Image (cartoon, rainbow, N blue to C red; front, side, top):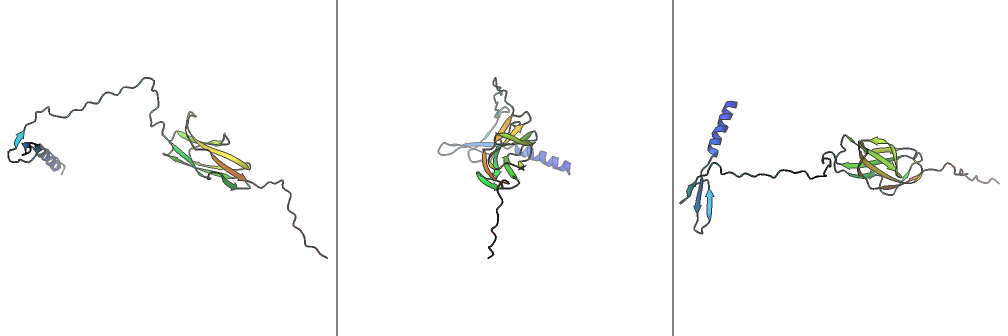
Length: 181
């Protein structure tokens, strides 16, 4: 089967070398075709009639010691949850930060969560951060993509979030008792 297929392909290549015909119409326009037309003459090509394109050599500019684009992807990052100026009610002080990042994070890059300008927890590869026992009040979160050497590759815009917790120092509410007369 293979032999017959190879012979068929070789036979097709022999027919692929078609003759080219040239003729001039009544208006003086020159035409070329692979089919003979009245008053057409066969065109003979020299063996060196080929289109050869030489590209200029790539010359590196001095002082361009930048890393290849594959090592430094252009990340687009955003915090998907919670929304801007969201109010979270959690007596335990739990906040979950969900980050969207495109393209997917490279194996040698990590994400770090910053709350109020300070890194919280350790670096990780997932864009999901679960925080517990956070103090009540206003907090600003930023997620940064970092290379192994600590260089910042991308960052989310700051996200302001409000956390409400019950204050344990409040006096207990005393339920009024009905009067008995």
